[in-house]
Image: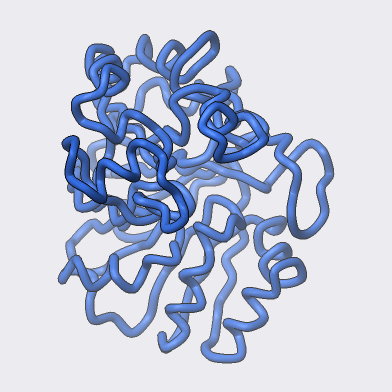
Length: 292
């Protein structure tokens, strides 16, 4: 598995932001590394790859990793319909064909809400594979995924908002059928419910939502008017934060991804970064390779 991008929407640094981490990565005043918007690529043989989310940075991400190019047909698996996870589909329009794995809610949002899918279909054929949570789906020889629903109360910008959020956001548990070892990709989660935690407890590696360090981060920095949870992301710190809930789980490697540009864990010398590392957890960076 290759981490293609590890930042939240807007990347790091974000073009219109002068928060402390963005200033530091621009002027080199503190140790930190630039990041593109979140996505991963998975393969069993190093030749056939599956993209999990298609960020607006997808072209640069593919060009940065020779194993991904060239390819005529693509398989893209979506966790949600957020623009930072789907705009890259339009940049893949030169493909001979795209196989798209998405829930019905995500598919319908991309078709009728944002019209992104309708635009893409004008350029290349797209084969939709409906994602049904709690169903095992083979991707390649010896590799399968099982999607699981991630409840969200975040207001939907496009499409219908049923209040319950079923199918709007999913995580994926990828399993090596030969070894039984599993990787979970969960870049967006608003609440680590018991049901969600059950999908994580015995995986070999967990890539999980690390958008904000604390719930009030964007408000405190003057970068927004909503809390992290209101934006659909459980914060890392504080009561009920992911650090508290995930560190006791028997997971070999827990790695934060989908990091917002305001998050101090991006600064490698920050006390927040040290707190994550003291709990035995990691912070993803673009280009990170994992073998499960």
